[in-house]
Length: 434
Image (cartoon, helix red, strand yellow):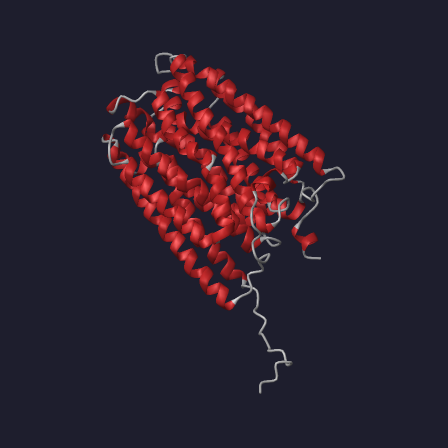
């Protein structure tokens, strides 16, 4: 008989080495690179779509707004899917939707076909971001979390930078609206490849290492979605105002620069990409700084403050556009480097995918509404090269959103300095390691 009273010896697996974690980060970020390229592939084409396909600003706004529309619900469902099936399967599923959506977008010049492709792309893209964000939190929580998020965003924004500058490096393609969008299909292939490589690495890691997960995922109940706490909701409010002040602006930025400031398409694309260029360099540095010093809500206040004057400077002054775009670049580097990792300190890991999904869902309400609102505002005001003042109303809307972001960041700081604080102002890498 076997002596069942003697416990079997189970070898303790070591933690994944640092190099392995960073390799996972780089490969999963490739999926984000392709995702970001596809999203920003429309902006440099705005005037081409207008001249070749007869699209209005409202139509162009729709192409980015409809990306956000399904995510008003889908991204929350995506967060729950991530919590149930795991990040690697979810990342692959959502990456395939990104590729499919980009292929449908380029298949026809009719608005309904292009909008359908952007809708399918949106179904996958935002949920992919949630999945990648959740995966990074799993691999880096308690370590260099903000720095890891910064590196991820740098790689992802290389996709945006490449797309916005495509008139410079692929200018010969802009004679036909379809050719630049074919490049975005290639970016979709990169997106799927990154998801596959991440899947392979994580399966290998589960056999060899202890990943330090929080245990079995609890069943997610919809009643729990509104129990995340006040600080979480202030971050969500900041998220919706901040991104609504940036991405809808970028939808029309190249066209705005060309018609209001007389730039070429190449220069307009570069000016728009300054936001991304700053973010690629500064986001990891800001993340590293926050990991060391804390003060997260204070930094979010500063980033929100920078948004308030930049759009009015572009609308009413003759100051070189490099100045307001650089200020916008600093804000776009700082706030995401602090905001997204902060959620990991407010919500338990078993519901982290759901928390990010809910946050992204509400963010997409803002992106959907403000892409349509700005496009409608431009059309109503007759914004064009002959009437550049027609863009002023949209610039005021963006500035007001910056003020609201500052308000929500202030309320977050006030809450995090009180008895219900979660440590956003105090947690640092050194304090976590004690």
